[in-house]
Length: 404
Image 1: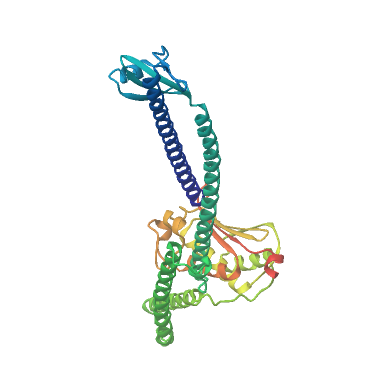
Image 2: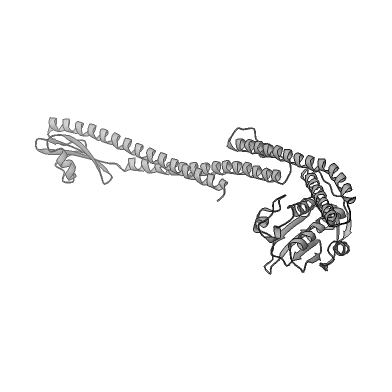
């Protein structure tokens, strides 16, 4: 049950409880007052009848002497000459003991009972109205709070997706200082603090990578001057690996800024994949299930495909198959599959899994592929098919949607 309906249910239950409590209070208070007034009136009447009986010796004003219908409890109460009243069977009795006899007076109580029934009907109608109004107010309050919280959740998701200009406090609206506004303000402050920290870390990473480029250029030139022997080749290989790492770090830093824009053009996906796969992974098998012309950035698409193929050939097992199916490209290998942590949390820079697939590398290839896919407006999903192996599927926007 959503928060909206929980609040509505609570307000409705409280409204019912309040309506019932007030109705019962009014009912019993009115009934007690009616009974008290009737007893006082009946006592006054029996006193008047008693005076006339003492003066004339005859019952008057509707009174009777030793009426056998007098309730036993009332008869016992007035045996010593006292006065007493009793409500019984829609009648109100008054009696007084006199010279060993009982002088009694009986009157109807049904008119007062009718008044109480009329009051009960009014109370029921009023209670129903209170419950309906309370339920309506509960629905309105719940809907307003739920709407504000949903807006806050939506704004938080957009902030998570990278929309830095979004503020939860502005998204929920209103000028109040309630708990929802305080929560939104706290979330905004937390998001700003986290963003500042991430920006600082990204600047440090980018600055380090940028500063390394100059000495790496000199180191690369010096390595090229080494003799063409085994030690020289090892040095050149390590320099190339270090230079590739620095370039990857710089690319990740540029993607993190969320300022990258795709240079869109029409690309026939089948022919594009055939050329790139042949150059990047000649041993891989290409299958064109359905060709389609997509509007995308061929340079960024090639980067994604290269990283996926490198990941498959380096960490997977043959055969490596590339499938083109409409706007989708799948890279499948027969290796041990992606680590569970990677599937659950997604690629992360400089963090590798615990199994053989994640051994080696720096965790940047799939991170860059994800970032470039986001720039293209595409989705890149990683999975382990039931038949075994690993599959990376890139779904590009269709030509119409990309152009729009």
